[in-house]
Image (tube, rainbow, N blue to C red; front, side):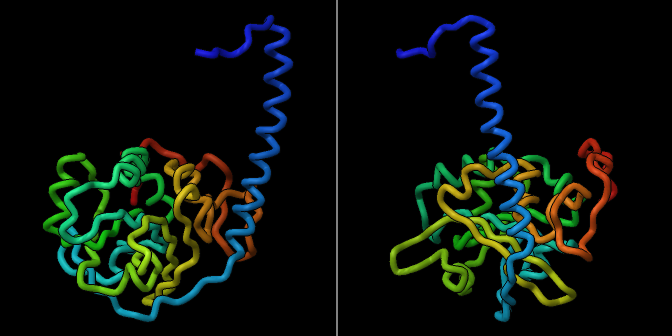
Amino acid sequence: MNLPTIVSQSEWDTARERLLAKEKEATRARDALAAERRRQPMTRIHKEYVFEGPGGKANLADIFDGRRQLIVYHFMLRPGESHYCEGCSMFVDNLGHPAHLNARDTTLALISRAPLTEITPLKERMGWTLPWYSSHGTDFNTDLGLTTKAGEAFGLSVFLRDGDEVYRTYFTSERGVEALGSNWTLLDLTPLGRQETWEDTPDGRPQEEPYGWWRLHDEYDN
């Protein structure tokens, strides 16, 4: 195995500071991207999809569970699929406790094309507790570009609810998904962001002092 070069403590400190400067630059670039993302336009979802979920039939607005924002991971599971996607499974394994997202008026859910009877065994096997809905029998995956003539794809969508109207604000797939999973990276995808005062956010959106909203996940009132 070709291991890293061995250097003195002072040389290591110098190398670390040099790398840290580049990491800080990358962080500022990510913050700028998140600010631009919060200013992106949105498109209305006009079709009335009927999903099957933990509580029975639900439309897209129901999946928000009363919150303003919804993050959906499009888990690649087709009807009759005998092979479970390792990449999708790894992504879900890396997701944090949803209470922190809920505290920012945001719901996280999974949606797949397979019927609920085929989703439930995998959900139970993996010990996942996130709400997982079936879009079986609807055009949801096709309309959102996840099911095409080229085949099936995974991805992550963000939706915003204004009363009974639902809008799609963001989508990413492939390597755009692999860096996500923490509450912070997921909130950075949403129109409302982390809702903290340091963020470059359009006027009229909720903001408060950093860290003040953080709680142990069983201490939130949401």
